[in-house]
Image (tube, rainbow, N blue to C red):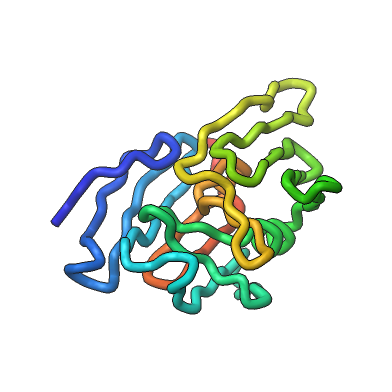
Length: 177
């Protein structure tokens, strides 16, 4: 069965549902030529997660027991572990409700627990990257770990591929002719 999903402005085909096969996934192309695949099984929640693997730049990262899970069919990844593996600086407000992810070059994102809005502040002088985006699922804290939809990392110009229980994230590479 095929369905169409719009994910961060990307139209993708859902290959199957969790009741049909365990290998549920979608694949699409973003505006920045990023390939995106997301496992959309409805069978998994934060309380019932399988052990996922996140691979950043070809290397599996240590998740410290904070495995990704699905919420309403959207893959949620641990913000701290994923950001650190990508080389981003992560800071937390004193009240613990706000996280900032800073790539220290192009932009930073401010995320608030329970909010589906990510506020980006651009660092470039030539192009203003300041904007707000709406996430498909709000930022969630589960078991003392903040989670965001995997799609968030596409906004940092990364390719994000999720298939079965493996998530691959790597900087987008484009070639100018």
